Image (cartoon, rainbow, N blue to C red; front, side):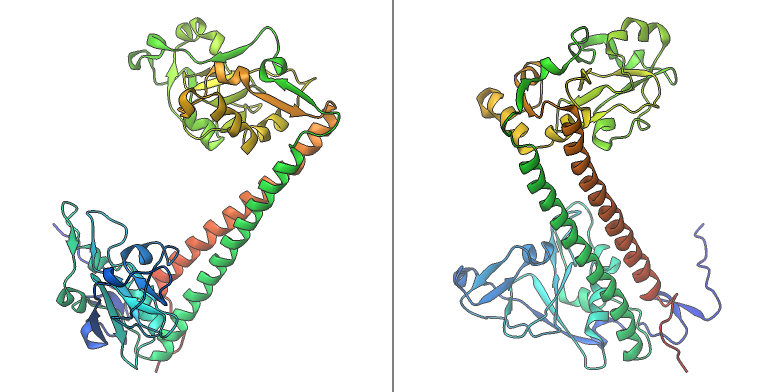
Amino acid sequence: MVEPIKINEGFKNTDAGVIPNDWNAPVLSEISNFENGKAHEQFIDDKGDYIVVNSKFISQEGRVAKFSKENLSPLAKGDIAIVMSDIPNGKALAKCFFIDKDNRYTLNQRIGCIKPNADMDNDYLFYKLNRNKYFLAFDSGSGQTNLKKSEILACPLALPPTKDEQTAIATAIKNAGELIKQLAKQLIKKRNMKIGAMQELLKPKEGWLIRHIPEFINKNDGIKIGPFGSALKKELLVSSGYKVYGQENVFEKDMSIGCRYINKEHFTKLKTCELNSGDFIISMMGTIGKCMIVPEKFEPGIMDSHLIRLRLNNDLVDANYLLHYFTSDALLSQVNTFSVGGIMAGLSSTIIKQISVPFPPLIEEQTKIAKILSDMNSEIEELQMKLKKTQMMQQGMMQSLLTGKIRLTKTD
């Protein structure tokens, strides 16, 4: 039995969803005109004056573009281009691009152009159309989706009663979008600054030493890889006991995730693979440079065969200094050199033993360098969190404003 839609007082149910009583729910054909694009293949030229608005251009937010010598299907400022065709479960279907300049863009085939009427706020309509659920419902997930002109124009839209309210909503969403762009630019700048700082701070200097990884390790421990073969068969895993740590912990730098365990008897047999606080662990597969230092507090357990463990001599090397070196281009360059046939499928104890690390002889200087880079990492992480929160805020704002749950202007 289908649950009836709960409609709050002051709202009504329409083809465009539940909206305020004073809002309208026209179909797209009632508030805009539509044009199809044209094929530009024979006019493509890197020196062309016109940007070809095609599926890739729209899906990449305008970052990847082709140019045409001819403007076969001119677009005007305020027009909305929409992708009409995509593969099953693709990310481009019904994705829109807002035209910001006259005489600059030309519309390619299988891309539609929506020209809003004069009583419409163009930005508001863009936000309503972009990846609208009505269009996505045409994707069966099993074959190429090709939206027809008639299907696009039949899209129902929730519409405030005045253009002023449309504009107020669009402006609020756009302002949040501008903040997201600013934060994204700041993040790129911070990351580039850190790359530059790493290249300078980790570059060998007069008086520095260069040592291979085994020289940093406590002699009794060596380089240890987690258990191979039958030691960790699925049937030996239990619901609780001693935890089995893997790459996911290193990738997320979080020892709390994961739910694989072995019993005490099995743990005793594999005790040489046990992890201790302060251990330096490295992922063998995937992105090179993924490593972490085991924190003071974590569930007792062992590492699996996808991890390498180093127990460092802390009188020779600062673990955090080594952590930053493992994320540097210098280390990646060495690993690529040691890899068989130039193809690097992952790390191994053999490769680890060949890696040499330049470092200042004084632990205090290593620690100072590590702190500078760690502080930069903290700034980047803080900015990433701020960006993520702003993106979530914009999504919530769009959901509330574009459905009338929150009003920005008073209506008669």
